[in-house]
Structures are given as structure tokens and as C-alpha cells.
Image 1 (tube, helix red, strand yellow):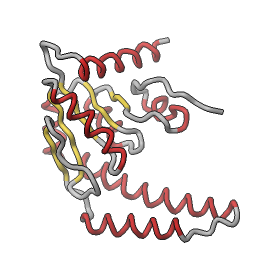
Image 2 (cartoon, helix red, strand yellow):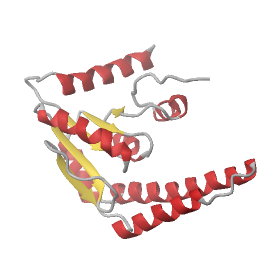
Image 3 (cartoon, helix red, strand yellow):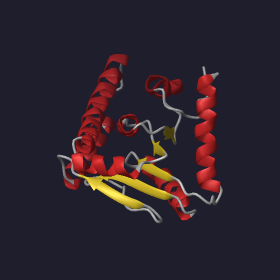
Length: 195
């Protein structure tokens, strides 16, 4: 029951930030994932900022699609790759996936493992880049955020939320039946699991 109360509280907080123009504005940290994950978060973040809340978005300097959103402050952090290297890696991954052998379960499993290894390396670089940037982490701590809006596709936001002692609100809840929320003990809307 306690987990349910925490989830409801986080949902009500986000709803209040987004829908109500309160007399006291909130402070929201946004740590998005690249690609289509950012597309959905960008408009939500801008909408929360438009309503008078302070919204700070932290993104890696090299990325495919992330950038400033209206009514937000964007902070960047260095990562050990360039935009060109990232694009090259993504294109190589796409080529590998499109030409992958899917004739057996073993071949499909091997392709999944290769893809996961590529994503793991990228996510690790992003997380290390942010957490090792002491100046930026101090700046984020000084903001004294009320909540962090993140996508559990990457654990970076959850880790930063834990480090800053700020509750995380997940924008996507389709990962395996909410395992990320159980593992991190962060509030999230109740997942819907299909058997």
C-alpha cells in the first residue's frame, strides 16, 4: 500500500506541475533518452516550464536529436564521443540488425546480445559523463529540485535522482512489468502487464 501512495503522490505532483498554474512554482530536472524518447519528453518539459515552473534539462553534448526546449534551461555535459561517431555507431548497428541472420533462435539471441552491448556502452558513457562532471552535479544539487522526470530506458536519470535524493517520475512505463521501478524504489505510475 505504501508503494501505491508514493506512486499516486508522484502522479499528482506531475499533474499539478503540468496542469495547474500554482502560486509557488516547482523545480523539475529532466534527464531524457535520445531519439523518440526525447521527442515525447520535449513537449511535456516545455509545457511544465511554460506554466511557470523551473525546468532544467541535462543532455550529453553529443546526441542524435536532443536539444533546447522552449521554457526550459538546457545544461550539457561532455561524453567521450562526437555526434559523427555516435551517428556512425548507430548506422553500423542498423546495418548489422538489417543484415542479421534470423534463421534460428540462437542467431536471433546473438543479435539481441550485440545490440544490448552497443546500447550498454553508450548508456555507460552517458552516465559516467554526467556523474563524473563534478561542477554540473554540484550545480544540479544547488537547484534543489522537487522531482526528476526521466525515461527508464536509460538508468542515468534514476541514478542521478538517487544521488540528489529527488523522487523520479517515469515518462515511459513499458519496460518489463515495472521491474525498473521495483529495483530503484522510485515512484512511477502503476505498470500494465500483459501476459
